[in-house]
Amino acid sequence: MAPRRRGDGRRGERRGGRAGVTWVPVETYAELEEATVRLAPEADALIMAAAVSDFTPAEVEEGKIRRGGRKELELRLVATGDILRAVREGNPELFMVGFAATHGNPVSDAREKLGRKGVDLVVGNDVSLAGAGFGSDDNEVYIVGPEGEQFVPRASKREVAGRILDALAANIGEERAG
Image 1 (tube, rainbow, N blue to C red):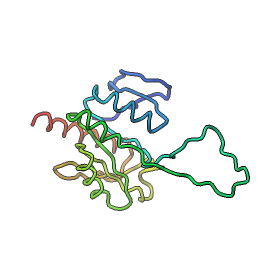
Image 2 (cartoon, rainbow, N blue to C red; image 1 turned 180 degrees about the vertical axis):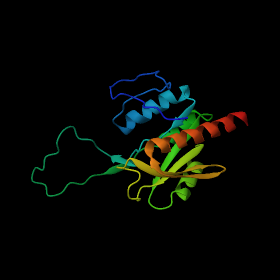
Image 3 (tube, helix red, strand yellow; image 1 turned 60 degrees about the vertical axis):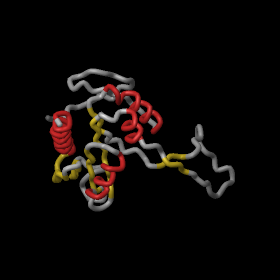
Image 4 (cartoon, helix red, strand yellow; image 1 turned 135 degrees about the horizontal axis):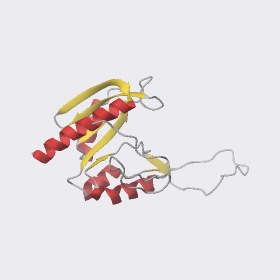
């Protein structure tokens, strides 16, 4: 199963297309959470690859914050919610794939997230590796499931996405058969 290009950059929710993909552009955590929770009941699987910040500003200013003679400004952050957990609560049968970006060996973080989030697979990657992950066209990952992990050596992100989709297809088939 090879990944297809999904979306053409235009704004607005669209359904259909060759892969039956729904494209919903979002700009904030709240928009992402609302769209994901709303659309999850219609899905066969959810691959939650968005790199959502763990924290967000407690207050949002409309426009520029002027210095006004101040020499410092305190920024208070609050934890964002947990989209995977919210989706799992409302959709206990949905096959879900989460991601764990970490520094160092990602397998332990991925395995911990697998249990804590209640997802079916977690894709772990070491974001400290030069030439892989953020800001690179390549990546290397571990796909972690309840039965073990599979290492995907450094390859193009398109190839890595294909391996993730292959693992999803194999595991969703086992889950539905068993």
